Each structure stands twice: as structure tokens, then as C-alpha cells.
Length: 245
Image 1: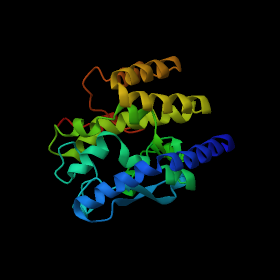
Image 2: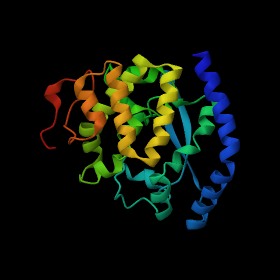
Image 3: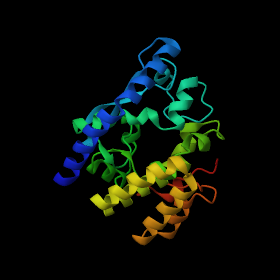
Image 4: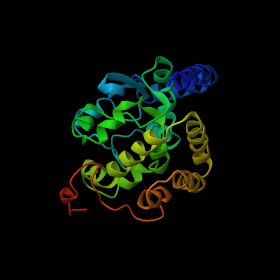
């Protein structure tokens, strides 16, 4: 773990310096849009259930978090014009290099969840809190189109819980069971590939987890060639799957 933390620290420090002109330009563009703070400080739960404040570029209107909706579809009216741009190219998450530098997060790891999301974790999902959350991971690549998936459903939160959460949790747990510096380097590389070709990135991720012994259903989900099937989170009772989706 010391090697992983050292790697995270050095890469985050260098990346913050190199990307600082881009980060400043994005911050200025967001500010000029409505003259409000370009940053959004989100409450998240980190390793060991320790809460931390995650920094993001603001992609929604001011006070959008007070609506009570935690999942965001691609057609969510709370997203600003500039917000659509930063979300499309994941620029809202680049600034989280600061959290990596501080030690709240890692470059690679399960994405950090909100307190209300952690509160309903199954005992198996609790293992997601045994490592530092990351900027990217397997699920981040597989579900980079999360907003588009949710846009087809009136209740984004319900759709997330039944179509996305179960598979994201399984992929996160698979990462934890197989984590290594080499795996981190591969996932960072595939994240970059995804910017250029999502199809190529998905194919590489599917081969990666298949080669490491992932269950066939998880590999199929990773390819994203089939419709997502409603499921339950790992460790939950399958009888609780809703028939509404």
C-alpha cells in the first residue's frame, strides 16, 4: 500500500502542475457562465467510512444538490451548458487530483459514494470502503455513459439502484480482490483510451477481467453489448429485485 500511495502522490503532484492551465481555463469558463463558484464541494465517504470533502468542477446550477435527487441523467435540467461539456470529457473529475494529493482518494479505486448511498450498502458492499476511493476504476470505464442510461427512466435513483449499482459494486469488489500497481497502470491507460474510443476501451476491460477470472456475467456487462439486466447488489436477497424495470 505504501508503493500505491507514493505513486498516487507523485503522479497527482505532477499532474496538478501540468494541467493547471487547463484547470484554470475550465474554472474561468464555469464562473463566467453564471458568476458563481466554479467548484462544487461534495460530501463523500472514504476509506474506513471516514467522510471527506471531494472537490469537483460545478456542472449544475447552484444549489442543485438540494433537490434530493442523487443520480443524474444526461437530460437532467439541472446541468448547465458548460456542465454538459465538462461531464462529456470528465473534466469535472480532473480537479480531484487535489484529493489524491491530499490522500483522501487514489488514482484508481471504487468511486466515492454519498453518505446516503453508503447507508444502504449490504455487508458485502461494505468492503468497498476498505480502500481509498478513486478517480477512475473498472466501473468508471464500463459505465461512463451512466447519464445516458438513466435518461430513459423517470426515476433516475430507482433505475441506478437496479441497473447500475449492482454491477458497479461487483466490479469494484473485483478490483479490490485483484488490485496491484500493474492493474492500476492498465486501468489508467484504458481510461485514456476511452476518451478516444469507448468501444476499444470496453473490449480491453472485458479481456482484462476475463483473464483474471471474472464471472461470465460480469464480463458480459463489461462489454456493454447487451441491455443491462436489473439485479441486486452483492450480498442482497435476489427476491428484492423490483419488477418495475
